[in-house]
Image (cartoon, rainbow, N blue to C red; front, top):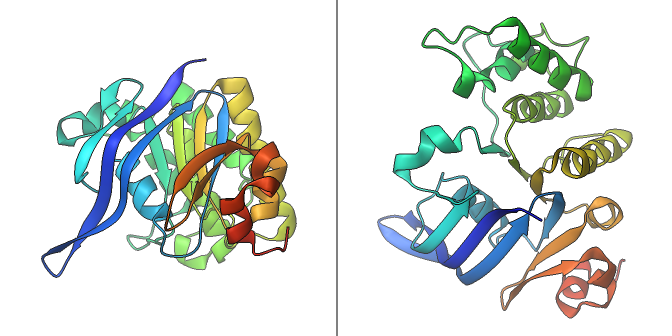
Length: 245
C-alpha cells in the first residue's frame, strides 16, 4: 500500500507573545493510501495543530513531514497544493463570494494565470457540488448560508482540489445527524475507491468508530495510531470517551 504521509521525529507548536509553545513532540507516524483516519483527543491536546502542520500552515519546530515523498516547507507550496487539501474550522467570507466561486477556487492549482476553468475542470466542480448536496445552493452568497451549508461548501472545495491527501478539522461540527453520516460514508468511499488518505478530527466518536479504518488517539501523555477494532479496549481512547462508548 502506498504511503501518503510520513512524519519523522517531529515537534509541533506555535508562537504566542514571542514565546514558543510546544504542543506535540517526538512524533513518528505514517499514513497510507486508502486510509480514513479519525483523530481523537480532548480539547487543546493538539489535533488542529497537527493538521495545520501537515498542511504546511504552521512551521515545524523540529523534524520532517513528507507528503508523497515531498517535504512540507515553503519551497514546495505550489507542488503540495496538488497533493493536500485542508478544511479548517475558521469561517471566511466577503467579496460577494458564492458557493460555486468557492468550490471553483479548489481548481486554482490547475488553472492558467487568469484562473480560467475549462470544460473538464467545470465537470470536477459540478461533481464536488453534487457530492456535497449543494446543487440548489451553488449561486447563494456565503453570508446567506447556514453553518452546515458553509461546511459543505468548504468540503466541496477540498474535493474539487483533487488531492490524494485531505485533512479535515471538525467537519461534522455543524452538520445535522444524517449529513454527518453522509459525509463519513462519502469520505470512506473516496479512500477506498480513489486511494486517498483522509485525516479527520472530530468529537463524534461514534461516527469515527463506525466509518474510519484507524484512529489516531492523542492524550497529554501519549499518541498512538490503532485499528478502530481496538478502540474500546484501548486505555487512551477510554480516557477520552469517559465510559460513554
